[in-house]
Amino acid sequence: MASHLNQPHFQNPVKAREYLERIQWPNGPVCPHCGSVSKEHYELNGEAHRDGLWKCKDCREQFTVTVGTVFERSKIALNIWLQAVHFLCSSKKGMSSHQLHRTLGVTYKTAWFMTHRIRKAMEARSFVPIGGGGGTVEADETFFGTKPGANKHARGGYAHKNAIFSLVERGAKVRSFHVPNVTANTLKTILQSQMATDAHLMTDDGRQYLKLGPISASHETVAHTKGEYVRGNVHTNTVEGFFSLLKRGLIGTYHHVGSQHLQRYVSEFDFRYNNRTALGVTDAQRTDNALKGISGKRLTYRRTHAQ
Ligand SMILES: [Zn+2]
Image (cartoon, rainbow, N blue to C red; front, top):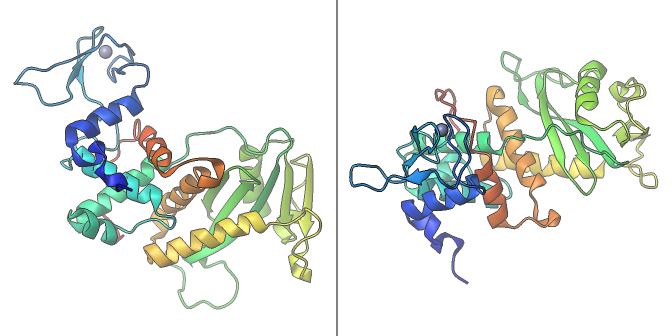
């Protein structure tokens, strides 16, 4: 079988741009200046124009498919961008900037910018609560790395560690949050905004979960403190399985993730989980779904941390 990377949009910048246009503009080009969507916007093909330049039939302004996206004003060829998106989407545990730098032959600094921008594209855009229609939602927290300013050698407890709180609907999607603490108040606020009220919630018997009050159709707990892990269909194995993949990636692939970037890395693992093969999403579709997320997210920021 030919490599995925032999496809024209991974090899040729013009084909890459046309591919991106098909993904971004399924109903015709979208003018970022006035919002007009029309198949009558036209491409400027003269010698004097750069490739992929369009003119809006309504406001007469010019635009390209990368205006207002995380790829805007990048010197990297679009087909190289598409390769990078493909690698981050198809590697189960992510791909480090070092690996991408070696694989794509771009500088480490460039690879670092690329991976951060791609993570931005992967950030969730759905605000519909999960577990609606009586779904089962497992919620749990895990800990990773040391908070800024905390004592790295602190023993016992988790107060000095970064906390990640995740909700997973069984057979469906996950949402994860880098949270300042795991008090009942913090977790309840997230659950109330992210979980449908008719969902069935399952957690362990951590004290914070026993204080949540009525926020779902039901709430059952497994008594981890008493060594109970499964009782009938009551368990948190799904969310724990997600955490194990997340941690293997954060530790094995990314090594040192600064607290200030942790949410982005966590969102990257959410994205792959929510576009996983078991939900019928192929590697190619996962890449396309990430590409759909590039608009409205242009960002520039300084390199603050290796990785
Ligand atoms: Zn316009």
